[in-house]
Length: 343
Image 1 (cartoon, one colour):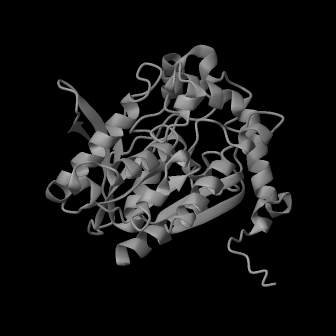
Image 2: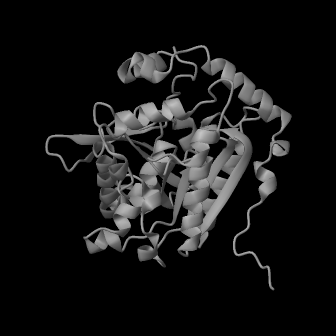
């Protein structure tokens, strides 16, 4: 019998032996830091946002760059606009494409100004204009408000990016909740009733440690640490309760909420290339493995980069921070985007 394997995984990436001493030390320091402050749900979302902005939480406040520009984009709702932030290459590179970035923070925390340094780095490396969307946050604005803002910005960019920025929309992506929302955006456009949106094709998706099922995958339960390493099941539960208040398990399984349950077979031959990254010290590891495998099963191109020992949020740390994995993550982002821009 031919024992050819139709699916292969580099299992060495997932074992403890693959984790460097630098990464062990980095994670130990992170756990110590996380133990010094309250969890967001212990003080409330708005109070925690204020504390983060004042530098009073374990993770530091955002670094704002002068190179960033604040803009607003029309909303489907009359009388309001959607705040967004753009970062252009600062090294003289021409703009070849627009990258719609959707920030993380459990649908509750952070905003379009939270990741200027990382997004500026991507813009400079790839010659893209990065637009980060300030979607509405839970619990003040639960589902579907945040996703709807992302859909509105995506549709506006399909229609206006070339005229406004001199380059078409080419990429979308984000981290954690932003990975989830980016996947929803891609599926929203592919299944749109308006042909100009349904026929639009992203050059690539950039999906970092996303949450693709609102009914937790096994590793959310199996992942255990002596102290919280950025994210754990209790924090996940609090985020989900804020984002999806009162939803039954059956409602949480709907593909408009949990894209892992989308029937991708209906989209065979139309899926854009996708880069999935995740660290092995992340309770959302199974989400990346399951979603990327489904992408492959229905004929999509899925590049999966597993970073041994990297915690949730690893790519958002400064690239010079030893043991974080951030430099490895941004290197693969650069290579993926440049390869798609050249094709």
